Image (cartoon, rainbow, N blue to C red; front, side, top):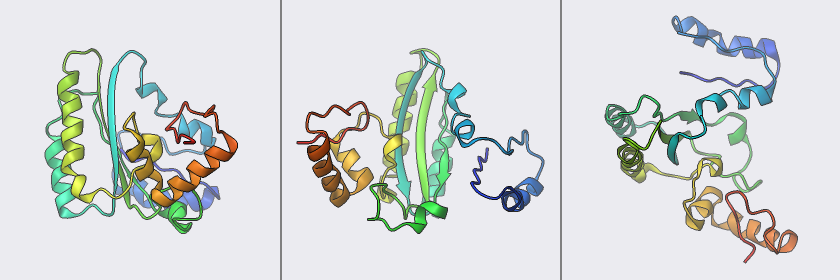
Length: 193
C-alpha cells in the first residue's frame, strides 16, 4: 500500500502521482481530493477498540541493503493478519526546515518505521508483541531519532530522543514557565521539573 498526501495545487499533485498510477494496476486507488482532516482520519477504522495493540518506532537514514534484509526477514515472521509496519517516507517540506528551528525532530530522517502488532484477543498477542520488539531491536544499529507521535509509554529518554537533548531542554524550560503544574500531561509528557 502506498499512501500519498499532496498539499497544494491539485493539478501539480495529479502530475506528481501520475507515475505511481501508471506503474501497475492497484487493488484500490484512493488518491482523491479530500480535506486534510479526512486524510488524517483514513486509518482510524483500522484501530478497533478492544483489540490488543503494541507499537515501537524508529527513524532510519536510508533503506540500506542491511535494513531491507532485516525488513524482509521480519515481515515473513508475522503471525497475525492485523499486524503491520508502515514505513513512512520522510523528506519534502519537513526536511526544508532546519533541525533547530522548531521542536519537531527527525527532519533529516529518510524513513520512519512504525512497527505495530494487533490481535483480536489475547491469544497470540505475547508472540506478536515480541515480534515487534525483536524487529525494532534488529534495526537498532540504524536508529536515528523517533517521531514523538509514534511513541508508546517508553519513558523520558525516548521522548528526549524524539526532540533531541537541546530542544528537549528548551521545551522543559517552556513547560516550567507556562505550565509549572503540568496541567497538560495527557501526551508524551515533558514534565516541568
